[in-house]
Length: 314
Ligand code: AHG
Ligand code: MN
Ligand code: MN
Image (cartoon, rainbow, N blue to C red; front, top):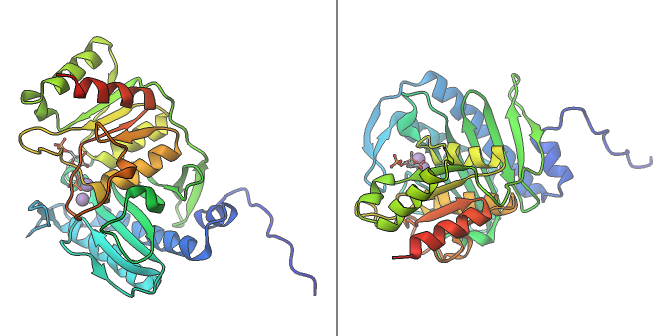
């Protein structure tokens, strides 16, 4: 029998079909689908679990809510069952967990970003970075082979890159991620700004200068308190800048290189934007510990450059 022709392109493109058509290696495609499955359980848990505290703290000494713990467990379960993960590191856990060193991928994740906003019913999300091999320490975010996030808002969206553009999917009524927009792009100039760790203006005068410039130039403020939602705003609207810089409370800013800044930097570069710690590209910073924090300026290229310049002036 001759080989069957390709399946016709359907009017609804699933995440799985999109990954296949983009040339994702089969194992990477399966892993991203498994992460998508975890996300469906998390979005259900968000709707049905009360927003109270778990009575425990994570590796950063932050109070965990029940949903932080539950989301972490759901993701871990799916990573174990995929049989594709060599090791993983979660924002909620101190150590890298080794599964099977011969498996192809190391995964880093923030199970629930913005979890303190659950009771306020703001958008929150899960963030993932995927590396080939069986190590995390000593790698740089540029080595990621995939990065994705899921945002649980009025709609549940999944946005991924495997280094071939940034693509957005919506979770439909029957539990499948369906393509919404392909090749999302971020323009060089920003009209929106998203100033995180703003308490730092008190002891970081250049940050106050930057804030004044944004105010004087009448840029539009968009800041939700969940990085996943603030970054999605930039990627969705196609412009904007997000900053989280150091001050006395958080000398390196509040955000984590491995779980938050690394994955978003890959996605932002793929969308045509950039990200920096003020001096170097986030993509080129070496991971020395899973609890490493870094200042970050990310989004529209020209604005990222300008913010870095203003922040480095006295
Ligand atoms: P998480 O909920 O995973 O701890 O992350 C919250 C982070 C990030 O999403 C957000 O940008 C930042 O905390 C907000 O900090 P401020 O409340 O200081 O603005
Ligand atoms: Mn987070
Ligand atoms: Mn988190």
